[in-house]
Length: 162
Ligand SMILES: [Cu+2]
Image (cartoon, rainbow, N blue to C red; front, side, top):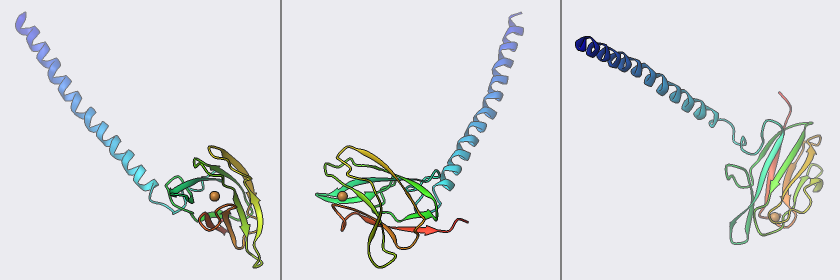
């Protein structure tokens, strides 16, 4: 009786061990696949962190040094070039964690004279502001801050839809 029971327990332990090994290898395979997916996703274009798939452009006002301001995207790129599709509406969402007021202006220099296309209005410290603009006019687009035009400015590149 005792011997049979011991044998039964021993078999249980053995079968338990053989079950554990494949489970572990499956788990480590899954983790490996996840890592591969992440690596390939982060390897694409330069502006993935500024413009998301639903035509939303995310920018922050950032103080990079004492009274030195830049527009930055979520990866920290300063004054990033925005790659946009022509004849599309975009939502620009800006947060201002600095203690200074900013205003983002989308401008066009197509005719050699700077003209305003759209603006965020004043963005007070701590505020998040959204506004929309359209890429109908595709030539010579850029953006700057009303109050810090020399520090906070960038280029907008417009492509025809593929
Ligand atoms: Cu500013």
